[in-house]
Image (cartoon, rainbow, N blue to C red):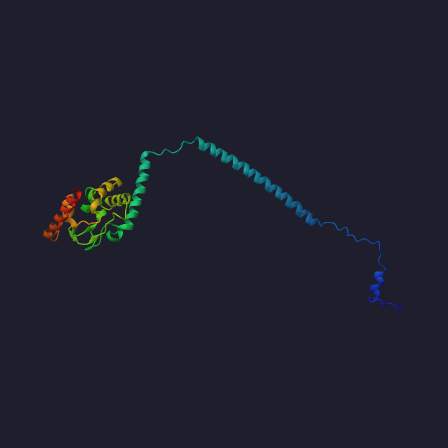
Length: 247
């Protein structure tokens, strides 16, 4: 029988052969270094002290909040009067009117109501604006197509109608804004007034006013025209048509 060669080195082979079969491995009894113990103790003390401070702060804060709540209950609420509510409503109405004017009117009449010289009549100190509310309402509903004199200057352009674009409340808000802005100081316009005027001219809403003479014949507002004969003829014809529709 052929002898097997041990492939391990001589030294290693002998070490393996000398291993005790009953040997059990074990860790050395190394103590924990004292710096680690000191750090752990310091952290524990710091954590406990922090929790104590937090608890104190919570209790103090709770007491302060409780005292504030009791004080608030003993304080009488502020009284809101009807005048305060009316003032708040007025501010909101004014803001809405200004916004609508900026959207639908300011491009032509300008934000200061001065209009455009030779093209667009001013709204500031305009007798048509300051007249009895029915007149400016009717103008805004139907528009104007024809010569109209404002503050000594005659304008012969075309103002669009808004009867189909704006509702009664929106027209009232715009006119209230215009009649109380700049140098104007006329009374406010209500949605009910707009509704009545819309109904009164329901059959002619799509027909613009034929300049200042027709407005004079219907609302009594003094008018000046560069061609009074032609303007009066047109006014008479339109007025007769209006009377037939009203009947």
